[in-house]
Length: 311
Length: 311
Image (cartoon, rainbow over all chains, first blue to last red; front, side, top):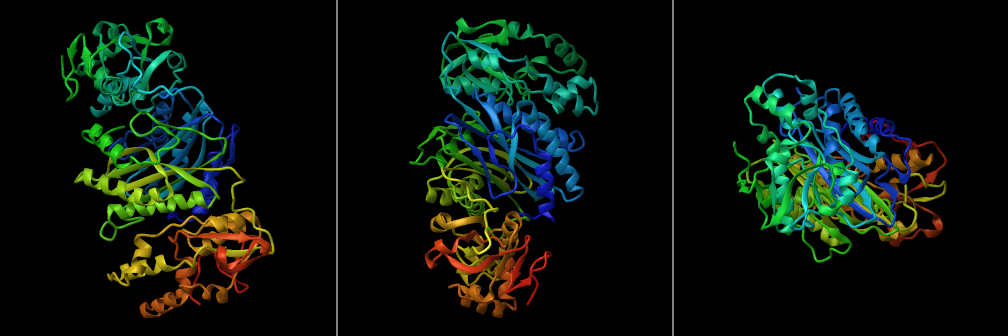
């Protein structure tokens, strides 16, 4: 479905932009009707994420590079959240006509800035014109063990995050006020960093990424596992970034626990862990799994379904 | 990245809409961070296609059902064009807010109307709001043999199509005039039918689908195989639909060979075939492969790169 003028030229450009030295497993990449990769006898893991201008990002805040990088981050986080290793990406981009070659190139570089770190290869794509920029990325990964689902949490497990969330929401709060500092906080929103949560994967009984916000994602696990998750303010406050985040919240007249509990868009991981496998090296313990039926509590008090409200 | 209110409800709805009785191989479907399927030791084939409102379709001509069905058709055609068997789909949809639950449901039913025919399962998706409807589908397939690329055409091979293209362009010409009959012609544009080209796959030395238009796609093969493709007006005229198509072109004051050679959006297949494997049962022979360097000719005369012009 090629609707961009000289699509052949663009495809050649994309093939160059996405060429990497770690093409292992790729038999046919960009340029034929479909890509062909060697399938191992491992399980295949697949997920798709989409980002739309003015819904997920604003062009005045984010460059195409950042938009590409951020969606790739969120996409690969979903693969890691299953305990799997990401391998391949397919990218569909709808772009405005003006400067499309440059926008395509910047999007591609942003995608690669994240994909390269994990030796993930872009094997296919589609391009279209559109009045607003939108991007949809499918990530494929593989796993030899059992995947880590959201339904494996057991009563008595400890609840961990790979890092304390909230910084992305703080960055958004700063941008919303027309400010752009502190830069590392704004960057947490615009250029979120992704790290493979290897130690947490090795220990987890259930897991998901916390891009939707800690409480929402904790509810995903609680509901799928048919347990309650009880979070602890004290334990959350022990996170290494907590003090800075709390000070920033005071400065901006916001609630730090709003950012941490419902902020979203941090690409960290939430997992439940058997106490025997627990330890400070796997992340920050922020709660425990209790008997229940899908609720998330803070210090024993139910957090309302509608979302976290001020304390 | 859930931005639709009560995404949980929508996901549950989608899980229902996409539930099938042929879930074989699906270990984890819609609802976790990513889907997990059992990988055989076959090769994995993957492709993505995107359709954007007012670029690829008009809402006044096409229902969400038709939009979903048509993109799925184009998507699965790309998998068949590699000689592979489609297995799974991942769907990203951006929809306007009004009636989103109904639009989602109609899109899903349209996707299934095609996917079910080939026992293809939707294993994942993402939903977003957007001012205009857009849809991006990733198809995954598998193949145990060598894939059929665009680069395998040999001098002396015969050129086949699985069916004569042109009816989709004729349907578009009718719609563009504000008409809606003959219905079977309009339907060829709005509801293209896909058939697995099994016999052509078994015989093909190179292959692609002809959604971009016969000449454009023939050029893909000619260029990748470093040969010329010489099409024959006489042979094309022997197609079973040719007479009807020619009469319709006269009625509308259009050129039938425009529709056939450059129309596009017919989800048929173009292949080159060793003469020893040729025969009427595999499709319609419309030309031969000649020595050359990537050109497409009609009765020996070069068709200009800019596209097919009137005769």
